[in-house]
Image (cartoon, rainbow, N blue to C red; front, top):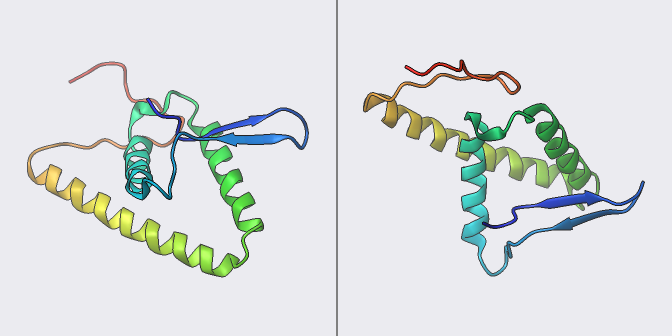
Length: 117
């Protein structure tokens, strides 16, 4: 198990970050976390706290952009990379659907039915 990102708040302004990843030494691991996170976000693997997790991810992204040297360039980069990942995910889903896999989507906070088909 690796720690993707731990964010702890010790006081009003004392926020600390920790991770087991080194993007300089293992850039492919970061790419893997990105795609694996996207797939996890599409499943019921969230753990029931989707709304809170999404709010904190977005808060961190906004904070990152707020202190970015070139916000426009960073937003363009995020837009480009997320569009490429979205295209890859859609292509993978199309391949799986062609192989007979059925998908049911649920919004964050909505749990799938307890029964199984």
